[in-house]
Length: 348
Image: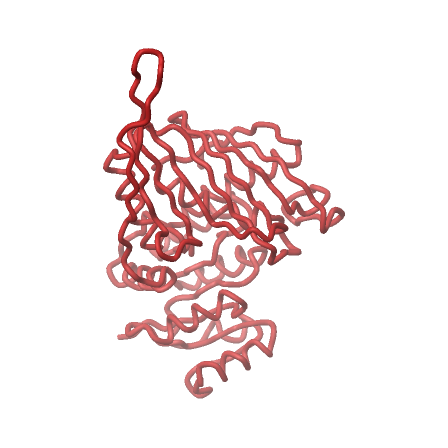
């Protein structure tokens, strides 16, 4: 028996959910919902959808009682997630939500507990955690080849797209936060953020009274092990970078998404002390072989297999999503207080 899927939101990312679930052998697309009729028309034409089999609607209320729905994909604006996800869970539907889970950590926790109480799957689409390069990086981190971990840094810049609902922090930081927490096996206990707003200096976010949507953000993460990370985020920089590095006493692990030939490299090297001098030794560069797989398909497939097996995902669960939203909330607090270091409390 195939699982019936309803996709809510078919914008830039949501349409890829439609493609994946249309072609997944264990799913059947039941409905597509989007407030914009032109997006529904585009979907119908692009995928040659049979209108007698796939219901197209502009409101969730029009389809939520359709027979055959087992799971709901929420790819709408983040500000709408809470009510849609809660309603879907209350109706007994499994949920795969685009990140962030919501814009409020308390809401994230409530939804996660609700899914657990109803024995339903709640998976968050932190796609990078299903990227073969990131998963391979986790394996390498566990081997100890980097030696004693010391610090990390990441850069995520490009010339757009410029969001009008959230700043560069909420738009970009969650990717590197998810990867770092996954690789390190821990979450920050303190955070710090500073930023600049040039393009929209007088526009506020719903989640923050801050004046202006920051185009540039520098943030620092402090982990309980003593590991620290500096991240540079900007959507006003034509130098497109997607690069993350973890540095240890014996080498560095580099994830460079813009390097098609070598997205993951292990650069080893250390110092040998000879009298008063420090001499580089053991230097080498290894390009790590990576399997070819679409990360989003891996997300969708994991969601489906979890439903069938009743397994809970430890990689991108509701709790993982809640932790990331908690960190972003604390970073926003720091940003609005001109870089004050903020403690990140444990989730209840």
